[in-house]
Image 1 (cartoon, rainbow, N blue to C red):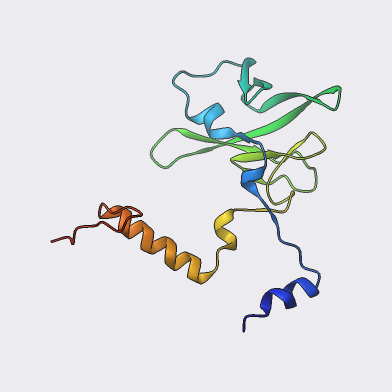
Image 2 (image 1 turned 60 degrees about the vertical axis):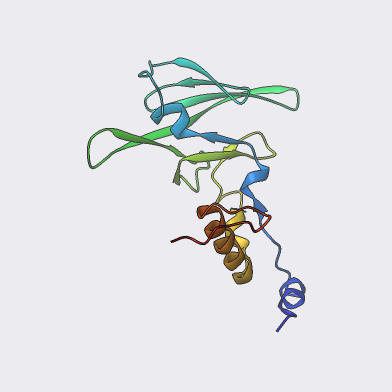
Length: 155
């Protein structure tokens, strides 16, 4: 039972890279969570990247390996049930065009979705015992405990 890891590796499977290790471009912080409405062509700086925001796209300017590239990232919006709009990036890869909130910077200097880059979240690779331990620690923290196991029994 404990040898599944060796079987998995011998079959040629590779573990996916994690999302946390890549720089990302977040659509909700650029469009949705703003204190003021954006203007067409507005300049925005996000983690050192220069962006021009438009209603239908964001124009990204990147300096990668000594050369500057400018390319559009399509933006679409959907109506919410109780009013307002939610904005989404479309993956710039022509074969994908997937709608996502975050795009990740790949080694070629392009922002792509996590499906195109074959990325996974950390929680997707947690085993069942790890999930049980996480639930236990969430309950301990919920009732005022810490790593010293000094919790008071709730009434």
